[in-house]
View 1: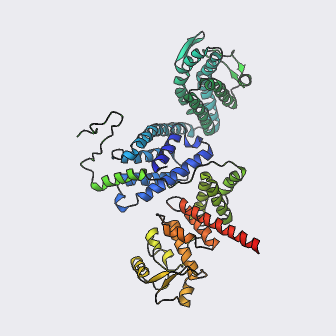
View 2: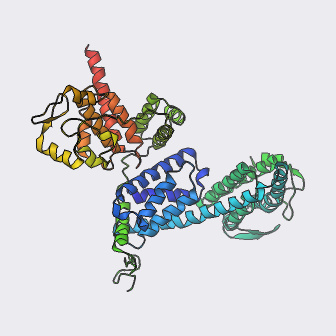
Length: 276
Length: 259
């Protein structure tokens, strides 16, 4: 394994999932590997002539970023980007394909990390001046308006239709959406990203915000896997987990606004049991 | 100039390296050096086999909090034996934190003997405490020491593992200046092994030195040093030390059985 492969592995791992949401063991190993690679890179670039050049600075920035106790994934993505930029114009056939692969993952990682940082900072700024009781009020309101009416209402309805459809229709509903008796249901894949934005980044409670993000990311990965049987099965898990969050914030009954997968005021606990 | 190499098919086209006229040759060379470095092996013969047994899980918990030298050593060896990168990372980070806070012993002895080849590899300045020495090379610069050893050394004494110099024998004072070391030979071992642990480049000479060392304490200290090297753990060196320690422990068991 060459140094560039270590950079690719790390970037690939972080492209979809924030570092703090990775399994502790996976994260520890990924960081350790990157650290070793950055150290080796620094060692190989330790020649005095390289210091102060864009290439030398990029390596130093990567080394500094990966060495921090409190890792900043956005800073790491920028540092990896600087390393890529420094060599992108060079002629080195031995690593040309690897560089292309690195760029593919890096583009996604950089965007995702920056986006996550901006959205997280924005909600933290919004919430920082609110007293604790107002924060709880804010979170309950957001979850009622966005999680229940905007997300779960749709996803419960989709799950209900998927159970009775032919496999062709199931694929269609997942991929592009379709018109059913209760209305025009958009495709599951299409809507997943906006769901995440609408809900996960609007809650003041940091732990729950991260939990919600994890629920969405886990299901996004299931969707990306393309296994329709699993996608349908895991949709129930996704719905159940979201409803559990709603319960935590004191939302005990479900009432759909447009779609009615369950009758108005159905206890959420009952829906969770049904989905289990 | 076109940035596409002519004559290649679509898939095989690569951007040709056309440095901007404002880029100095140093910048261009540095970029090329970085490209070459990226293709270099990541110094990771370490296979990432994920160990999940209870012992490793417990070691990881312990590695994050323990400040006992024995425990740190045990965890480092366990990490190397099991190829568990996570444990290695936790143990080395803990050790580094302890050393930064000054809560841990300073592993670099103030007084060690004989200058020479070691600092060619380590790149340390001659004024570093590790190079405070005695003997015929005591007041020489690094280059002078290397020249002197090259000219006058008759090799290494097999018994003391010390350099043997023509027309020179250490006086009692020289030996005393070697400080905590039991013998100049042992001090030399420590010196070389510290250099190797800290070295940016791993040289064959140090591998050979490891296999001559009998003192487990020196090997243990070198293992700790090698794991906290600034550039990241020196895995090759650590593995060589663990191999030597394992060898010594096996011999010691055999000796006990014979008795």
